[in-house]
Length: 347
Image (cartoon, rainbow, N blue to C red; front, side, top):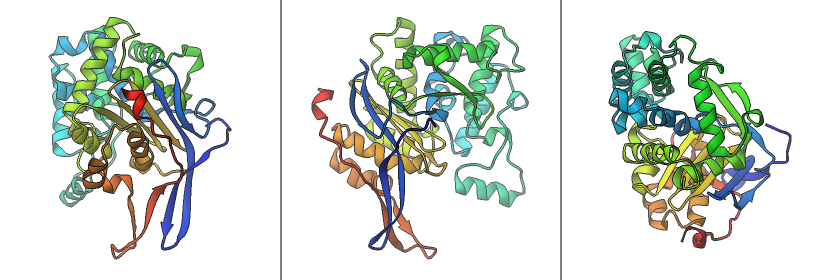
């Protein structure tokens, strides 16, 4: 993070007291680049996009022609855009993507970790089986990158390097959607070993606005955005999985909203009509869902979610309870800011 002043975004209570707070930055931006509302300093706050960049990384499979050449289905593009739970449906789909492009698990360089889904992780542990690269939440993204390398006629070895043709093509896509030049983007190494992109929080929101309404971008980008958008929103379970905010919200919104979380308190969303939302928590835990109440509050201000949808279907995400070891509810997580009503900007 650049050193700018974060704002109070979340309060975590225990009984009558606020026990913890989370500070950070929020931006709501339209596809023209207008900052409609903000909390903190999202224009000045430069941080890594982490896995919220995955829709733009997978978009290169469409613009390059790789998805069509290998016969990728929407579910395949969804898993290539995912930070999945490693439920059986996810690992099987990643294996399918690898097979379509003539690759295998041995080609993945994402590393292995236990499944994010607790039930799946417990079952794997009981079986005495060690996690494999397919269980990495980023294995779909890596399978897509390997497919892109094959389609470009580039070596699959070294596909994670910033100088590899796959990563250069991805950076070009990120630049078009964020409106930044390559030299304005800070390149780091993500948890799975591929480049990650450091940029202002405001530009993350702009990219998601353009993902939803890419009218000012080249025709190839418009088609790719529509294809990836449809794949993620129509097959949202592949993007996250059971109990995950991205999957739950996109299923409920039925195409009106696209969401993708990232590590270290990053969470981004786009709404129909071309509005983008980006959140960065500076002191939050690694789970992307921790920023959920903030994005849901922004979506409510935009009129993109109804009160019924929030109260009846997203309550666990909108106001996560604090529980003790016995499972009793002893507090809540709540937003600590107020946004103006922004319904009119979506009409």
